[in-house]
Length: 233
Image (cartoon, rainbow, N blue to C red; front, top):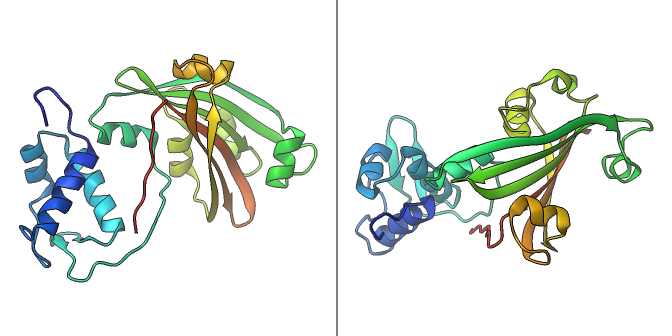
């Protein structure tokens, strides 16, 4: 890393992979602690933790509480997507996170949402628009609909200081999720929120979660220009 450049979890992850592939850390080797790696790479411990979680998800390392992290002798291969908290994602990039609730209102679910979530008519939903920032730069625009019948406590929840995703993960579990990835062009609305010219290609993710057959929430997340998501198996 050059002087003044922040170390992201990808940098830590790739450095660890390089050492494993070069046999500096052979199969079965006990890796340094997260604290030691954070000091070496000059980053937050959360950044190292994110890198190690990804390596564990890929089956490259084996993490065990109290006994540490070891290089797997026979790495398994799998592809996984996790429902992450935006705040943690930004902080693991070694960036400063900021959240803003743009607006919220309780209304009747539109016909397209009722059809998508198989909701009765009428159905009450909480509609939210939120912004997430990394180092005061637009990171993600979030538009979310929450089924108030499934999560009645959300009606009185203060979502001005905590994002709805983080609140939902702490408040209610989910049993199933459906995720869709799309490439979209920035319209006037997205252009304004993400500070990018209209027509700019953007990465968009839509996610629906259920709890034992009951729809909980549908969210559409649009990321800043140039955002990338990757997974390996």
